[in-house]
Image (cartoon, rainbow, N blue to C red; front, side):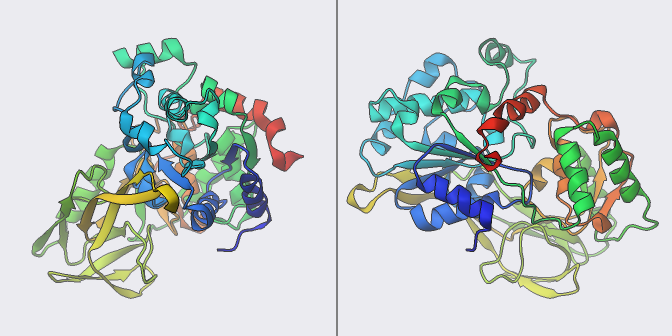
Length: 428
């Protein structure tokens, strides 16, 4: 796995042992860097993420399962009540480093709980018990879930200034070195890249950039039938998928997924209904490299153990059942940290491919997509994530003009990056 110059610099800094924050816009290779750390340091490093799908992407475990945390707001008392299994996991020196991916979606109370658990497990009153912590992600992208109108939300906001991990004592005391990668590899068009960067941060030029992207997306005379709709809500995506699917005549076939153990975050439907001719979105990377996550195509033939698909490129592939696995870490003694499967899910790696939500598209690279906002984007970073899934302007379609109010950027994130720019080692 070859790293570019800035990725290699970041990797070298991490190997020097400092707590490090790896940031940067979409498509700069943050996941490639995580993969390099995993390849070379997996015997002493655990890899964590806030969701099951994100954990599967880095071949790690979820934060909540590793630290035995309940879902929902964690009160100070709950954060201080550390599970004995957690203490056992970190009781020896097998684990020296923790990598947390998708840090933008890790809520402040969860981040504090990790710090407290490690201090108690390691019996050291140092940030994260003295372990090296690498946090990876872009706070300008999708944010943690917090219902500010709920009772839990009211308690949360009495304690924290925002839902983000950087607004915690744990973050401040960790003294993270910041390395912001900026060599975009998903897109190659400098004009497109500059427009994306502008709406990512909602800078002084963002309205002109948004107008440019709207014009590019709405000026095309005809949209390809293979275009995936990116929707702001599940309801909109479900409506588009159902409308198109119901229009297809022919016999329906239902494939039922198989769960083993408490598999929680299903990447594809447990009951997958398909017809010949329906459009599908591929949701995994083939082990033999024949297909990858984010490709779309149409079902040609269906069998008990395989499905034949014609990709939008015209290539014909055969897809078999795919197995996703959820893992749990354990103390490996002399052999280093261990990881074991605790649940798996087997199903064809497909879902209807007429539409999906922007949230589910995070991490995808798409050759073409149509942005369909319905009543508008409603979350911080949602507009940027939608636009930045596209590899080229030629593949961008905009169904309804996206307004300036749809580009939502949390003030605390803007302030954080402005205050943090002097800690960015790439600026030195």
